[in-house]
Length: 213
Image 1 (cartoon, rainbow, N blue to C red):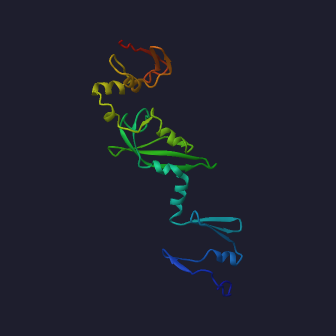
Image 2 (tube, rainbow, N blue to C red; image 1 turned 90 degrees about the vertical axis):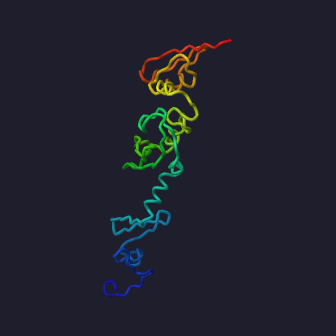
Image 3 (cartoon, one colour; image 1 turned 90 degrees about the horizontal axis):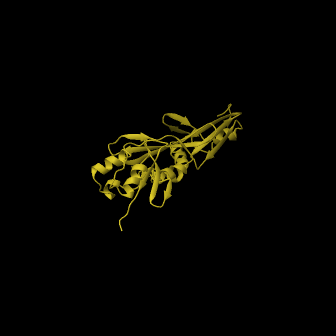
């Protein structure tokens, strides 16, 4: 009964979590307001006059998160080894992408934050990154992350690894070891390799390679 008159409902009145609910179309039928159902997001929009209310189901948040992540969801659970990315634990340490958080500012611009988990269970949050495409770019950049265990691939002595982590080079180190220690060269010349010292920005060093004939 509405205003003393019987009203036929298109759906059943139900009790959900202790609350009585009725079909949203009742407002439309009585011309008291409007109701729109978004099947893709499993949510409804209730409007009465100039007032609008979005009603979400338990599945809505999961659906919206899946939409926001898109193909980034495939990265969750993948394992990497830290190279020169300085906010994900120890260099050459093993980390797993535990989660990717998405936030939206008032202008609708989305930013992404990767949550890494180290082998010891500790978590590391990256800085916010604007643009979904920058996440796979960051993870596929070998200067920041490696897709293999460097200790297994390069079974060098602990002394060599210590020099690399301290950005040091010495006689007898091979090209790969020098590049791990100082990074890829910025200028190449015949017989010379020039690179910026990561430990001392603004400085350059020249390494001369002599090959035997």
